[in-house]
Length: 451
Image 1: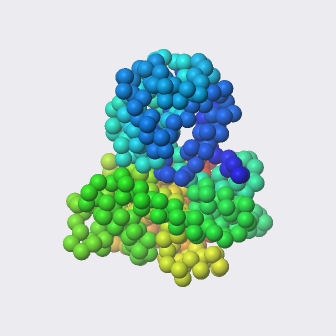
Image 2: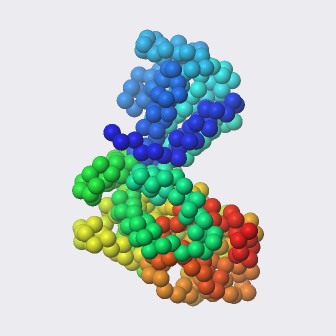
Image 3: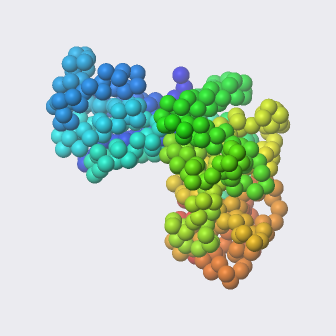
């Protein structure tokens, strides 16, 4: 089976090489490749690997029966499986499916203080039980958030070298348009990525077969798995409400006004009954919520209305799999990403920004047509980001940049299907550069000029 190189690979190496490293918890939604990446790292770097899966082998939930100190836990693991070998300084203990036994997090403090063995924990749906894990291990663990493949990792999977990132950034900073060949190649790859998404099982099939054949079936199975998780981990009435929100995302993104409306989810539905459902889906890593700013100004955190939001799928390929059959045919046969009124473009941009570590915020002025898709920031300024299905004029972007009402906005970014450009304070970049916007802004001065 082809191994897809991931960004966590380099992170795990750095973690191990840090002499003072703490037990590591890898969070992320199911089937994004957590277990595969960790096990590969473990086998390449440790003499002994102790793998414990709390879902497949629930008997291991007994290992804390004599307390949480390291010796007691190792003694009980050895009693349950005498073949497991604990070699000090050369052993990794990998607790998988942590969400089914969050109590083990209490032991992380003891493993850290003991120092003989490295420990990594992982699990899907971790956000659901994370408050419990956090309180049990505060100060004695490191967190790493893992997602499905981003566009850069997809490029690696397709055989492109890692220096492609530096090449893209060089073009962006110099405002140097991509060549015709580059545009054709990378837009084609970006279109493939939009249709497939970044779930490893889907990408691997595509790499091996060279066609979209089977990708939709795999995506739909992943969606069925998500629904099964909701039924397994959500409690009571919330199951139905969470499923309702989840299933309504494509239809609501298809509207001209993409704001998510609870009233459209079920008859008589009220926000206060559904607030926890949206948090649940975000915590599970299944969706991304983008909140409406109260006003376009800094700081972004704390300056938003938590009753107004857009909901995006965390993996655009799974959004694609939720579309109707006609849209599926149009996408796969004609590569028409314009279906659903630009919803796919917005979703892929939200996904790229989230995977790059950005918060998601938009703005819609109640009494006017002023609306902006996303906002980012530099050290001193607020940066509006508009995602355009067509490369036409961005009126709201122009207003935000030129109006004295928004003094913290000096320039804006437009993401389109065309090449690099600059005009009247608006920097234009191709869709396939979206994953680099955060890195790009690190070198931008307040006036919008490069260092």
